[in-house]
Amino acid sequence: MTIHASSPLRVALLAGGDSPERDVSLASGRQVAAALAKRGHIVAAFDPAEIRLSDICWGRYDICFIALHGGAGEDGRLQAELEELVVPYTGSGPLASRLAMSKSAAKRRFERRGVPTPPAVAFEASDSIDDVAERVAPLGYPLVVKPDGQGSSLGVGIARDESQLAALATDAGRYGSLLLAERWIDGREFTVAVLGRRALPLLEIAAPGGWFDYRAKYERNDVEYRFETGLPEATVAELESTAVGAAAALDTAGLVRVDLMLDKNGRPWVLELNTVPGLTSHSLAPKAAARAGIDFAALCEWMLADGLRRFSQRAAVAEAAR
Image (cartoon, rainbow, N blue to C red):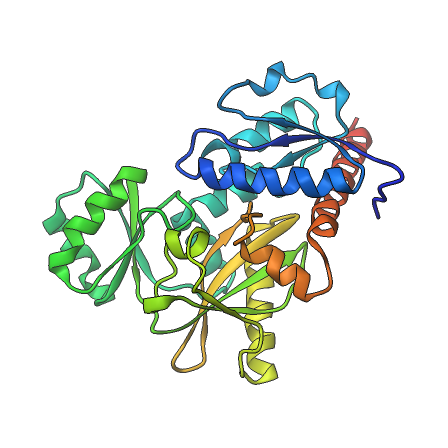
């Protein structure tokens, strides 16, 4: 399905929310609203932190565009509510969203489906640090410590040894009670945006100091993004197919972004999958789409078309089951 500005859609855009990623979400929302408006679509923005979904007059809109990052907007709760309200929306469904938002749940699914992912240990922020240190010791140091259900690299740090573990666990605990200690993969960092089951061009991330943190993602301008990676075609293809495999394992839909490492032995490892990738001026999925010849407005329109197509499919299945 192709959407043209000559037949505008009425779009309810959700951005903001009350997660720690609120500012990033608002930035994504501004970019999306401006791009769709230029294509002739009618966009109304709503902030779930200020209005309940049930109070929106959905009959005035053709589809909901989700530009929420973190929290209920990305963990499946909002998607489930939209389905109860019988509202078409962009992106993955409730189950895929819930799985992807929980790094430990996603890892379990990846492992069952044969998607390579670094070994990790989940623990509670309230656990004794001595107990945690004993449990994570088999992973070896350095370790990546992160909240289980948070994006944008908030609360993520590298423990070089046991002495740094407690401070990083405390910091990560500000973003959630369930935490993850993951084996550090020494190598090169990449990301692959996936449209449905189509991989967009592989993008290498070269951040100053080798750490792609929140500031590097959204504030700094000295991060290098390389489409020309110098990798053999076979390695590029393996990284891209691994990303598509990760999306298939979680049964995602729409636009997703898969973050990977390529270790020193040339083996890919999936770090995580983001079901609502950032759509800001610094975000990576739009960069990959542009590399593939898809401008930002066209990317947003593809997401709308995909959401409407899947809504029609769900409706057909429900009708057939009656």
